[in-house]
Length: 333
Image (cartoon, rainbow, N blue to C red; front, side):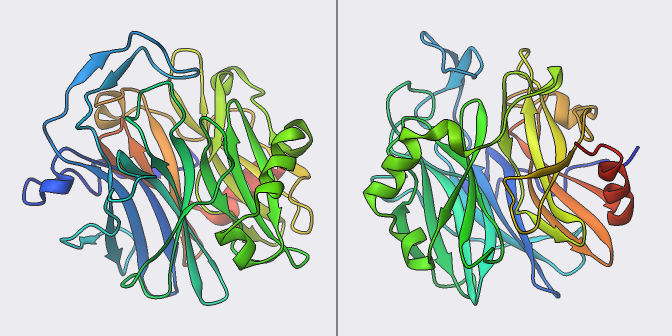
């Protein structure tokens, strides 16, 4: 196996923290050379699973009660394996745009500013109405936080947004997902990213097919795909980890390699999943059969991947970065 999994979750629900007592999953990560910063989705206990009268496109047949509301937590580690969770939420669902959840964060950094993309829910998670949008927050120290509200397009359901961690040809690139494909958009500056002009997103939506980065291609990802962790710069290209969902609603991880100067060009892409549900905590949970990669860092030439498992806990897997690149380069387009 290319990736070696930790046998047990590295983070689980904590009964001592009301806001994280029901589920802890889907983490974004950043390594600053000393500390791994982990932001994760957390839900208080008490919610219940219910059958849906109307099914969300690309989603399961069930959802959860209205008290299924996500907070964003923060944890740190010096070795990438053992994490200390801060007792207070990093982001509370306290604004109109995220009152039903601050979900699935990714972390990037441009200049001295950490950029946190996440899914803000203005309505209950499993309604079919407009209310699932890309939100943005920034911080310089993971202590004080600036909220920029909704930074994504006026689209019914847009999520899985992640920002490239450096300017490319002077611009800032962001991958996002309008089902079933992954799209790529460019911003001229941090200011434009934090407060995008309406015309920018309108033009993007009007020509959405021209901005598709990747489409589902293989059976294991046939229903939809979505960006995972922050892209990792390597000498061969941008390493992209992503999730793919099949028609049985099983989530697995794939990989791709994008051109460094033009990330719209795909150099290589795995034909088979490289991480999939096999352990008990991945097979059974609030949403079974889920491996959802969202955070990845490189420490001492080892790739650490942090993933949500069955929408309940956080799993961890490692691989030698050189072996990952060798695998991908054997699957060139």
